[in-house]
Image (tube, rainbow, N blue to C red; front, side):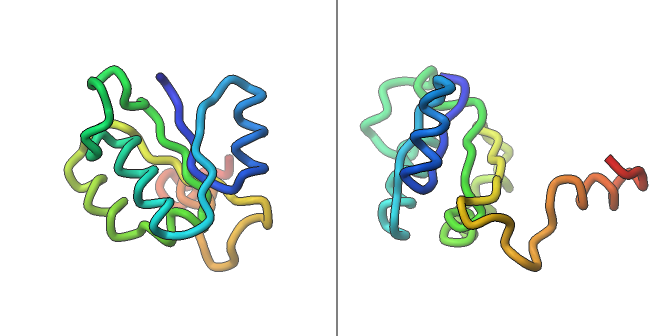
Length: 109
């Protein structure tokens, strides 16, 4: 499994049309359970091959799991966690990927 998405049901359905598996969640506990399973922290994951290389989260879900995501990223383990806007669009006050690249490199993408 290369990619896995956690977010709203409609978003998950769109990704499934492109062949990307995912889990629809509507609250923090569901999001945490899906995150733990996708990252292999849940004993039900069979092997390392079941862990995706890229975990895609909506900004809303990333906000719900901010402490868990930060802890995960500090250990430098796979999967790479990528945040995307949800169905309601970009959350005000959050940096986009283009903003982060512009700050780091100094070039508009």
